[in-house]
Amino acid sequence: MKKVWIYQADRFFTQPELQEAQSKLDSFIVEWTAHGSQLAGKAEIKYNLFIVLTVDEEIAQVTGCSIDKSVRILKELEEELNIGLFNRTLISYRDNENNIQLVSREIFEALCKEGEVNADTIVFNNLAQTESEFNEKWEIPFKDSWHATVFR
Image 1: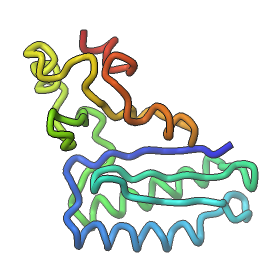
Image 2: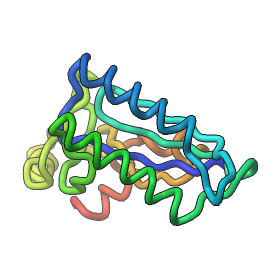
Image 3: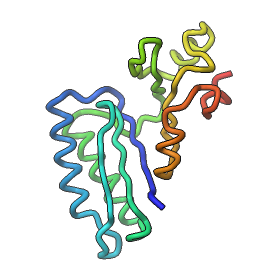
Image 4: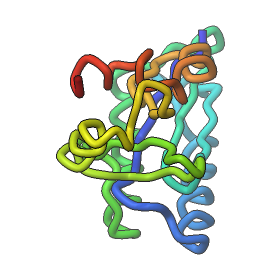
């Protein structure tokens, strides 16, 4: 099984930041280990907004220490690029033109009430934990997501 962690930035990466962040993540992945075993990891930045880390646990199991190492590298990126990767109060969705929007919970709630966000609006489910969940349930209609229970 492939384990996935999704970190949403609090703003979009600029092109130079994207290159710097991807380079740092690539270097990290090469050295990412769990109890001395190399992890079969991958790091990619999607849509200039999401850092997605993936590990194939059939090759080597992730440990608490290896997760701590990944959090450490993300915290370093936060400092170097002055970007937030652990702010869980922002919601991302696709607007009517299919552009990704990033807004506060309050604004998202208002957009739901106004009908700007509706049952078919695509939202990002950053709680996906496996590669199959990521592939099938990361970008999903509002009505099928956890968002629908929180923002009625």
